[in-house]
Image 1 (cartoon, rainbow, N blue to C red):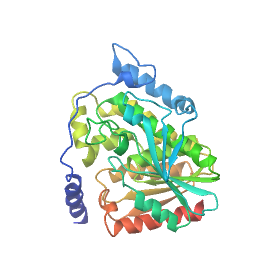
Image 2: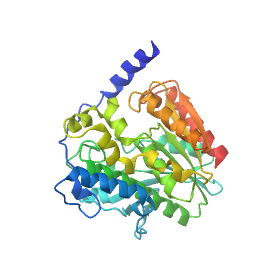
Image 3: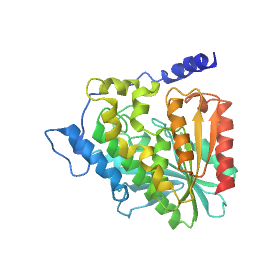
Image 4: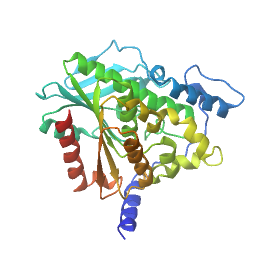
Amino acid sequence: MLSRLFYRWERTLSQRDTNRTVRPFEWGLDFVEGGLVSENPKLQLLEYARRAVSESDAYHAYEPVQDWRLDGNHLTFTTPSPTPYPRNNTVHGWHFPVDSGGRVVLVLPQWNADAQGHMALCRMLNGFGLSARRLSLPYHDLRMPEELERADYMLSPNLGRTLQSVRQAVVDSRAALDWLESQGYTRFAILGTSIGSCIALITLAHDSRLALGVLNHVSPYFADVVWRGISTRHVRKGLDGNIELEDLREIWMPISPRAYFKKLVGTGKKSLLVHALYDFTFPHDLSVEVLKDYSALRLPHSALALYCGHYTSGVFPFNIVLGYRMCSYIRKNL
């Protein structure tokens, strides 16, 4: 009964936005490094993905940023991973400093978060004695190209552009850590929600400065969430008939958390894995796979099970409970 109740609630919340567009399927070879050209784009992307995972330190490397600009609490800089869209190439972040003893949390919101998304969470972190920096994701709010109403270019049936956008988010996050380090911070955590959770895990695995991650909604695979989730049904429509899930999973492996779990072994980095029992966007069986992987690899972690769904985790009273538990975890472990 609860499952049916939450499904109806989640579906209603997921349908509030009426501007979802079914975009055409594209391999997107021009968005991956080197601008690949091939008569067999699927095989080319599969090989590209295998190489990206096997050489992930190089894949997620970046040139240091030189043009930091701070206006009040608004920090901007040029992305180390430029795209053909000029507005998307300026990264925007908002800094929330307090006397935190050198502790700071990099906060990554969910897909299609507006410009105010997660600002309240940053203020809550301040209340727990933690400085915070909220980062806008690629193609979101001030980074959104003028022709868009939603952040469709970050996640779409354009396979190469989706790969590029998540990699861009990872290197933007690492560059943001550079600035925080230059300001004297010494203990770093990252908190990501939904697609931000995926970005947070990849960043956690590739940046030695991060001591812990809060992963709010988890899945081992990027492709499976898109394929099965109620939030991405319009993306699935663009994929249907053009690619099978198994191939999509492999092509999008460089932006999938499971590819990097083993990089966390022996690092001592801690994670809080948040999963919602009635989640139809990140189906719960996928979250269970992440919990099993962490246990099998003996990675230090805690799990937080929410008795709600994906969208409803942002609704009172679930959002208060979630915010309190995430902030408490960071304060205790950072």
